[in-house]
Image 1 (cartoon, helix red, strand yellow):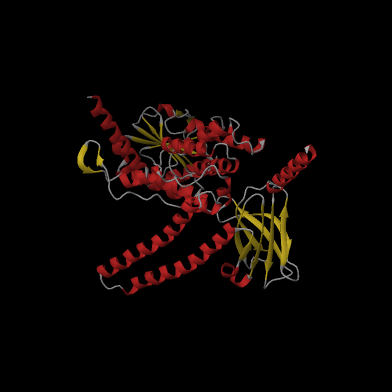
Image 2 (cartoon, one colour):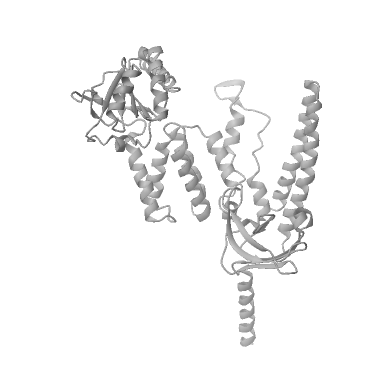
Length: 483
């Protein structure tokens, strides 16, 4: 009796081990292709790049096997022909064991899966999309012949109804199959449905809150996305969704972006691939953003995530690069006191410290007389000064950055850059201005207030006046509050 019990336990244990086996086994058969090299690839956050996991060669009968005992994340994978003439997407999860027979010339209609209902469902969806797309385009084409506004409105209404067929298909499947990966995919791409009834403004009963749709949409944007399932990172959808959120729904100021970064990274905390991709994307976005002051968010991410050991996947060299970049940015972020510079004028006789400039606003420019962009920008700043900047008691502290003294002096003279300008340089290279002000290209510009606090950076002649006017408006509003 005991021996039978032990044997039963061994059998059950062995069966459980079989079911929990890592890796995958995917048999493929192309009915119209043979003797070809094919790859098994996966996405990672976006659709523009795929990574190769495995390779196999189709036999003379068009058959091949992808097999591995190594644990995988899973997601939307791709079977790609080496010559890139064709590819097909499949859903793959760790431990999957299934087969597919398909015709290369008509993949979506011909694919037949054995042992994977979720892939059968996935390809049924692809077939639905083909029919849906044709129907949508047929209605859309009628706009060309629409003669009146009424005609156009009627067509747009039909397009909306047609669009609900697609969202309804995905929604119904996700509701019926919430734990299947395809159900999670459909939920992840689902947009929040904004209520048709808007609430009243809190302090104005009877008046509808016009900001409600945007607020509701933002607050519920991530409702359908399962941050606890790393397989969603191995699909083409996450970066587009994250990019739309950051660029379209988050207020483009450092404090707001920092807050949202923390929220997203907290959602992804503990999920290796999702956290890794999220932190990488947010770091890249804040570092390269054209939005003024966004480098503050970059420094925050470096100091609070990389320097605290949360980016466990990067090596010491890459970590040092991030730390070095943050160190260069930190001293010249918006709101920081500007580092003083003791530069000499064109005569090389008189020292003019930046701190000595008496002005309500100082435009600090690092430039070069041989820089093509600088040659265009300097005269435009001069024209702007005479047209408007002088009214705000502005001075331009212009630093020659490339040690081209003779050409520098000639350019200043030939372009009559005199009134409002303070021309200086550092012939002995003792001020370390490149490090203090992160000058890695020219022209590099900063706007300082009367106390030499940085109020703007990486600006040009097109936006400096607007920034000054906005700062002046804020000063007036503060004065009114303090009365």
